[in-house]
Length: 404
Image 1: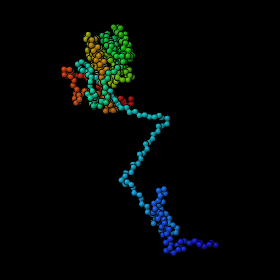
Image 2: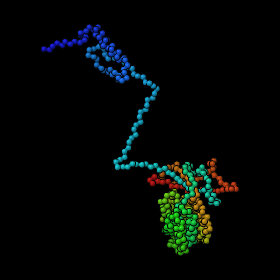
Image 3: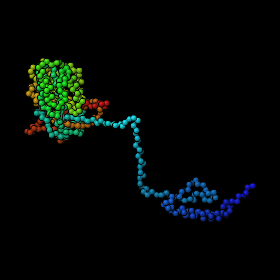
Image 4: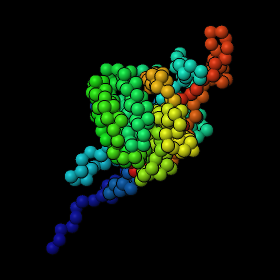
């Protein structure tokens, strides 16, 4: 038999008036405690949740709880800090692959410019960077490097030595001997002769005596019949360009020949393209037919010599060299001196072309001289008479292909 429950709720045991009085006494200390500031070391009291259940004994709901006022910001005008930047993506090389380096090739063009007085062929010193204007395909370029150069040379004497006639051989040997005489101890020079084939007389050396001995050896047999009458000028020049392309820096070819080509595999147009592509090789050409023409033609027609001279001159003009056509032996020392002055005394200009495409096209170069006001430069001699001058520079270059 179940015993009757003896517990009773407060509402059953107290009258209604007393119930409100008891609740008021219990809630007063709680409200007073919550109104006091909490110590700094104590955390603030937990806020009552809206869905908190009402007490089992009834009474007021949670609507009569403490109202929390949010704290004002110290500086309402302050801009909130920006969000942090995203982390940089990390790249990991594939397994087994080393570090990868990317190179950007910026094209650079170097031009050797000689400025010679037209009448005396003397070098014009004292020019400044502001005196030069460089144009590539008609567009002015900014000259970023400038200096006066007078350095040792690296040259190849390429000399025709065939059975065409001893007059040509004598003239060629005299020219080669005059050039060797003016060499300096730091110069590197080689000598190659050609007829139907090429023959190395002296490899690159700084020993001037070694070169002179090779010239003397040829001179001892100059009146003896040579091996071939044919002269492959274009093929010999092409072979020399290949030989010099493996040497760093500026190089020079002293081409001493009649210029008459008979059996070359290359045509004149083909060798022209090859010469234009050699951006660091300058050709100085010396025609040996002048003496033969003065003595009666040497068995060759005047038209043949004229065409050969024009082709030799074209090789020099394309590369910024000079062409000579001496008629007598007494002219050779002066011609060689001009070659040496032009090789050793030059202005070196450097620029980065505005056309950066590496498409293998030919770029036309033009160099002009101007005064401080940008007008064409005028020169005068000591008597204030105007002087004409020649600007000797290559007429262009061929841009590299992108695959090179």
